[in-house]
Image (cartoon, rainbow, N blue to C red):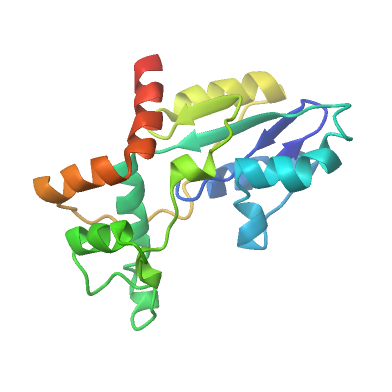
Length: 195
């Protein structure tokens, strides 16, 4: 999470949406950067408003606009699946190396997901709303906004990129995912209508 006090902007770090690259490019210019622990780096909208906004906004005297990025839900889950399938995680409870993408989605949708499928939800992360929500697949929109708002040019490196693997999701599992993760798909749909 990055705070730009003078520009009255907080960039929230939704996992698997390119925020590591944003941090790399913008941390030197931020007034505050929360990079660790992961629970604070990836602070949800509600948690920010409940625990941090009073501090950074001087108890309402200087409100910050919240900015975040969202990824298409299947692409987002695919990124988690690929990331957790890396050889470095072999043998760990959160490794997806021995499960198919369908099995990963099935586990994700279960009442008590196993560790490898506990990745949360973008809709839950963003619950409460942000002022500026950008599509992951349209980085030029985010960059244009940030360059205007921060008054500087930004060059984003490619960091923390999941391995490239062809993913196949059965129609049955896709349909189930769209029903059970309806909030994520509905939020994404609002962004695609704006494009």
